[in-house]
Every structure is written in C-alpha cells, then in structure tokens.
Image (tube, rainbow, N blue to C red; front, side, top):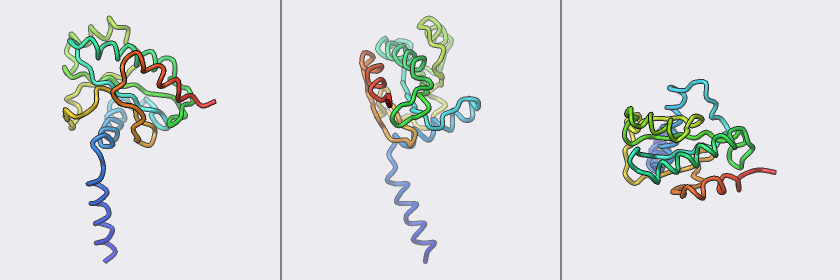
Length: 156
C-alpha cells in the first residue's frame, strides 16, 4: 500500500514539473559531464539561446559575458557563489559560431550546442536565469536589462 502511494506521488510530481525545471536539470547534467571542473553548486545559472545570424541574441551573449566576468563569484540572492553563464547555440556551434564568439569577446561563458539538449521546445524563452534551486528568476531579458537585473540580486 505504501509503495502504491509513494509511486503515485512520484508520478504526480513528475507530471507537475515544468519544462523549465527539466531544462535546468538537463543543463546542469550537461555541465557536470562536459565541464567537470566547473562548480555550479549554489550559483545562479543563466542560459541564452543564440544564433550567429541573430544580432539580438549576439548582443545578449555580450551582456551575459559582462555579467559572467563581473558576478562570477559574487554573493547573489539565489546563488551565494556567483553566476554561471551558458550560451546555447541553435546552429550547433558551427565554425562560424566559434568565429562569432571569438569576435564578440566571449571567453568566460560556457558554450553548448542545442543538439546536446534532449529538449528542443520552441516555447522556451530566448534566455532564462535559474536560482540554485532551479526556480526561474528572470526570463526573456533584453540585452540592456541583463546587467541591471543581476546587479539587483547582490546581497549586502
């Protein structure tokens, strides 16, 4: 009887999980497997989905890169050990994407390709920021607001 109740709760919990929390879990697993030396415990996780041909998404890359450099080890609400920035390329990191990242001065951010994700949902925001517990703090920020929004999370 207890197993049935427990199984029922697990199924209900799984059904109630949103796509974003699954994204957070999936991205963290990718970081652990592809970048094992990167510490993402107690950090904010910022994700930007970008394309070489989309200048708006490339401007967001630059804004998130500035955030990654400035707040890498800052004490932030929801991430007491700073922020980790992921740039997920929709073009699957073609050679042109690597050139674009270099040209845009992207060095601190972690770069992944969208084909690494199992979740290819068009409903995902253009960018999203999770706290250390997987809760969404911000999504769909404009490049001019990224630095300001993260700055508001500084704990004093």
